[in-house]
Length: 379
Image 1 (cartoon, rainbow, N blue to C red):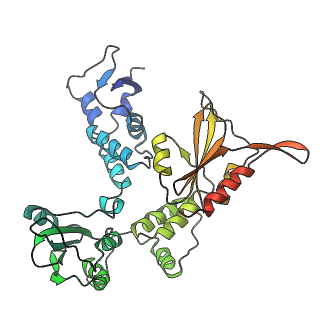
Image 2 (cartoon, rainbow, N blue to C red; image 1 turned 90 degrees about the horizontal axis):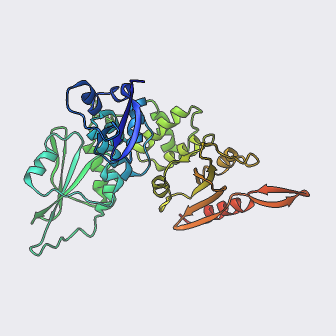
Image 3 (cartoon, rainbow, N blue to C red; image 1 turned 60 degrees about the horizontal axis):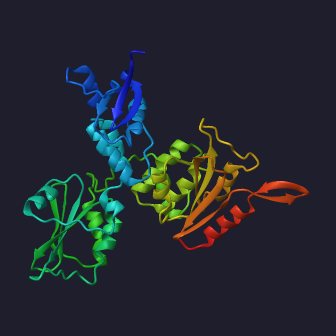
């Protein structure tokens, strides 16, 4: 029993083992293996002055070396800050990979260079190709953006391949420069609308010695990626791990159709559960695809009273291609559903009773009608 450790994290007490806390290099291994003083509360628990909100997840990472992160980006950022405090490099890296870069998460947001020092740091031997659009600024601070050029569209199309910045203040009109592999491309070239869209990517993406465009990705599933680009559809393998890998590649290549195909293929035999109301909000606030959340009761002992005359998996398989389906378990509440699409919400009891064949039975007629209505709405 001497291996058990009590931690008071911001007023919440957690119990774990010393072996768990010292499994990875970091805050706790340093605490236990060096003679630094340890602060304890009145009960003898080691006191840590941090928010306890995500500490259960921190502990799970230290136990297993991996955790499933929430889909709410704000939560992931908070977890990353906690991981940095506890010096858990593996969890920091996991959070970084889970979050989209700003240029992908906010494709409608420009990034500006404001000094010569910043210009040098961003363009001298960059790890990723960089394009800087130089534009004029008038004496009153007004910016005459080019009317014939859609910079936002360019940013959205190529942000995954090229870092894109704007620098204001010249009096030459709009022009651009590209920086990659120790070279400067398109020096002082005029931006000629759509003509540059393809040329810039072809020239800025690094090429190998033979002149082929080099892409630093695994080639394992690239034949399938190419077939999807040719035909708009592919038959996915029956191995879930392969489908997950293909989805990651599709996300990298910004192939929304293939990402959707992978998601629909990935979950027909697996129920997806929501663990928190933060996750619920993140998934249902203005969703791109209709979302159906089925709420069900769970006892204080963790038992779930499933309704066995309703096949959740069969329902999932039937609608997974058109509706994102999740389950959220709550205490002392019966089964009901909420659907979310295009700022509309549909709510009702999951089961209704009617006499069918002379026998009173549960049915989900109204649930099916709500789902059909959700699918029919524009989104």
